[in-house]
Length: 337
Image (cartoon, one colour):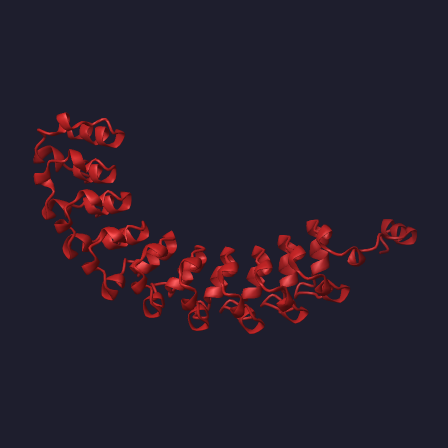
């Protein structure tokens, strides 16, 4: 059988044991233009039962395609590694790196298949292996939402506080992707959730920006934490107002003092909420004429922004602008007002 036809049959699931039984290494290990062998394809699509057992060797499992991926990378991505004899899952075969620095361990972590890795190979040192971006296995799991598949003893503060090349801890990555709820509650401490990236962003910033502030423990959503600013002057409370996350903050903490905090442009969270359409998450007691008349450095008020954006239905009727009287309309037509 031609190697290209074998690739196609493996992808489509039309290959049979009778057709593949007599195929030798010259077919199974033949690399196409992308450096991919039929062995790679069989691993990717769960067809390893069609591969002659004699070809399932450590040497063949280390064959790389043009991207540096081995059959084991594909198998752990597709959860077909169960078809390999456990003796082939070694530190060497699982530790081989793709061109971007991804080991099979990283692929297993990202896809929730660490349970396929021999337990003896998973220790704290292994969890800290980095990709070219500095991501550890825990960073990959935090991004993919598979932290709940990591052995519990490896979810410890020291490992979760490890940073990648962007200065993001595992907590930051989990918050950005909405997966903080996969971590035990006792690990969500102020020490780790207020840690900053080089840009000054805390985990609270990451959660607010991405719309996942509800995953932050309520005791940490207090005034002093919510007004923390990044180096660009962006506060947690401004981010929450923009992304509709004010509802995640205990209502009694949404005070005028908090919601009138200014950023580097003079905007308050009320300006941000008015612009994005989230004034309905602001307590009525804060939506007063005085607060809605606060001007930013461009002299715009939250009320003006709400009017311009058509958000008046989110404001109490008593603060709505009064329609102009007859004299006002006449002066307007004459260009005198």
